[in-house]
Length: 343
Image (cartoon, rainbow, N blue to C red; front, side, top):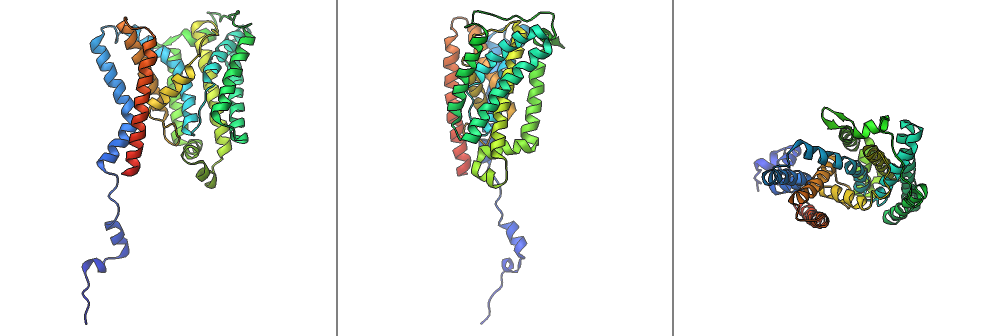
């Protein structure tokens, strides 16, 4: 009895493995990934086109400059928030730290611009470090820890300003004022600082070992620990970074306004979270990028500017539209994430 040998049986195992190899992600899978990563950018471009066609003043130099400056401070806060959310955490203290950083910078400006810049970084960075230590070492929930820090920072702010009755001013001839109100090539210095920080943040998150640890902790904390990633140190670092960014944003805002305003920062933590999520970063952690957060900030500012351009709508509609848009984005992210896992 003879057995017939087919051509496939004569192929080496390596050749058969290549032949049977998975063809890779489908077109629908690639589209879902692109939509999740760049959907906010496409929406931003579409919104700007519609706004420019609807309002003659939208693309004017003054309007664009105002949007860029108002976006810069929120963007710096959102940059630090991106690192936190990628690890699967949350930071509710950044709004209060932003206000505290501004007041501390204005108070410190009487002792020189170096003190005015370093002091808010030290104070807010220390609070962020304490947040990280409590979360990473004690196992406390980020929501509770940062909520307590939010209240504590606001209390320190009120103590410094005598319950908000005292306002510290920044000398308009100081170097700090130049950072806030100066311009380079017709663009405000805070905008250039923000761009530089986002470039640095992108390099750190995507091209360094620390960035790999951030993604690993957010993706699966237990697996990251088994792979040797310093989970606790990574968590501590991202909350310290968030505090530093909030303090720096507050200092730049004080330099721009030439004063430390106590009522600022209320609700900024929610705006920062919204911008990060709209930019494509998953609240569950493990996925995100800083460029998306910048796009999310710009998109929120464009929406606010369009509502202001309409004129007949009050500022409350900004919150309504932003909240509705955030809900749509979260639903879309969830659907796209499930679709990619299925495919």
